[in-house]
Image (cartoon, rainbow, N blue to C red; front, side, top):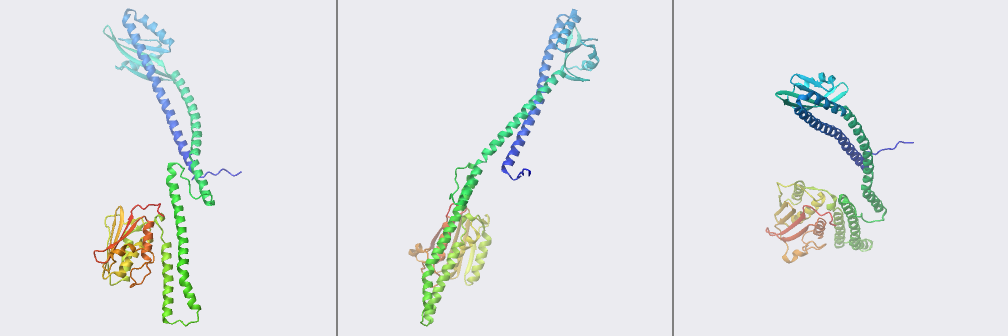
Length: 446
């Protein structure tokens, strides 16, 4: 029979290991402290009792000092009944309830302080209280002791009984930990079941009825599924757009090629225009399909990407002076996928480069909002036509090549990043395009 394999990556195993280890440490520390505190408590209790007995014996000696030996003998019998002993030194005379202990306890008689002292002799452990007093001008010392060995034996037995009870409680605590961990991991099991249902098509989204610690995970998974649906819808829209946009020009080209009429220069020019339209549509739809969106979780290096684009357009339009103003003291990375950012800025710079006379200026500010402003000194756009910019396929001037698709793609990019684009008349005389994108892009944007 194969041995049970333990997965070290198991969250259940890790939780049980940590909880059981902590329970063992706490229980063991409590048991050790119990032994120490119990010992100290018993010592203090017996010490206080010995102190009271010493005070009582000294009072008897002072009241009956003429018959001191009789009083001490009486006290000795009482002490012996309670397993106590005494040693008395009055002046130079020493008497004891048990002469065997006089030599052992003799060193305690020379100390001048009242104190509770522990004495170990052979197999016995004594607890001795030393009390100084004065009787008719003579100094005396009384030692009252009790055999602490029997008390220690009882405490030791009690301590191990406590250990047995602690072990049972520890076992019970481990079982409760297992139950609590299993109950606590039920939401993860439900989430796994929901993922299985999602994969089999039985559900469209994950349920939000989960512990608060899993809210972020479920929300992120649902957002990624929204992104997948969005990309699928964009692909379908692109196919539909291409089908609609290419059907007519392809039919016209096919009709010309199938016809028997010779293709003169005028018809050849029209064929080339039709094919260029097809190329432009394909290029535009491919650019739209490459839009990653904020859910891609990618960042752009502001300085690197801007510098690369500016250098590229300086090469494409060598007669135009492209200048850029970038933030210096801010974080250079922005929450926009690199290719999306290049597409976003490239559309505007390309449009400005086509129409500018000599200057294109780009200014970028990044704080709570990424703000990009591109201005040119071209002929510009009439104020009443500004609102029509960005409409798909609409061109306000046919003097430059193009199909009016770039600004519509820019509008889609802004929508994806919950941003906005506005068109104004530039102080340089041409068009001013201003784009704003929140620095913390909403992941819910579609």
